[in-house]
Amino acid sequence: MEAKREFYLNKLIQKRHNPLIKIITGIRRCGKSYLLKTLYRQYLEEHGVKDEQIVIIELDDDRFEELRDKKALREYIEKRCPDDNIQYYVIIDEVQIVKDFEGTIISLNNHTNYDVYITGSNSEFLSKDISTRFKDRGTEIRIHPLSYKEFLEVYEGDKHFALRDYLTFGGMPYLLNESDEKEKINYLVSLINITYLTDVVERNHIRLPEELSNLFDLLCSTTGSLVSPSSLAGTLLAEKHIKIDSETVFSYLGYLEDAFIFESARRFNIKGKQYLSTPFKYYPEDVGLRNARIRFRQQNDGFGIENVVYNELRCRGYLVDVGMLETRERNTEGRQVYKQKEVDFIARLASKEYYIQVMDQIPSDKHGNNEFENLKKVPGSFRKIAVIHSSFHSYTDENGILIISLEEFLLNQDSLQL
Image (cartoon, rainbow, N blue to C red; front, side, top):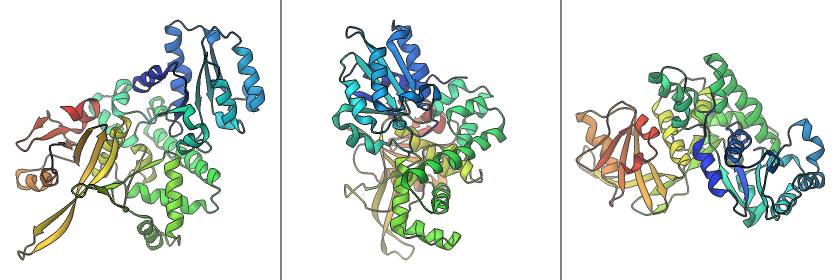
């Protein structure tokens, strides 16, 4: 089965013929090449573009070995696109294989009848590089693994188990080809060990890869927890007897984020309207990778569900922070004490802002007030939402909080506006 990836295909269609280089980024094996070389090509052909107008170069393929020289690459493309009066579509996969490719790509894009699209490996071609390498000449399209909606559209098993399987194995596209659970696990483990960690080690010249590997494990096991470089270094020392300073941990965290393997969510003081320097939360790009790394000990746990909600928000284009509320409450002795409470996510898009709490089940009457208290204390009229891992029809309670099931939240692109 093949995922249609309509969300990302539409982004490409919207950017078609604009004067910028279209730069496709994302974690390796998330479907960047397939999106361009198969789905986008099909779209172009269905809309009257002839085969000779589409130039696809796969630089990691030996058939294109001679084009790994920037001069040869440019000459080949210009030979394939000789008529200034015809629109051409130039798609270059794994562009980082060409040394000093930036000038060549910019030069090609100066042809007004060339629409240029490039992808690159995470080990050499990172999101943070784009602004410096291309300045104002490029536009980035970030690709993620399959969302649950995309996953469900091509899921061939019993639909009643689709969400369970997604929470367990995640949305890496290749897994659509595997029905055997052992093979799915083997693929995810191999992807982490052979592809992702190797990329990070090679790009950043890490001399002690075992430290990076253990940090990767720790981030997966603490998904959804507040951490800092110093706390992570302390945990590695206490639990693994690995001595590593917080500065090195900070660098490694940056490398893992640069490679799109993890994202960090900053804490935002809701009443004080300011960001806090530390700690952060780290979320893996795909929950299946996280589960594989912790040997599926905690799949479908509350933090895994939180991870899926975070990833869905990011796929939809929201900026996502962790909310912090400062409160004063009376303790059992009647004294006022200062407390910090948490709202799982603050999702922002343009002028829209949403406060979201993620729960494993609808709280009972006995504990309901406590579970929703954090959302109730958020000042202002912003929308407040509780996402629950249970099956029910969404509703709005007497406090104006939208109560929505995890599955409905994931399937409805407009779920925050219900």
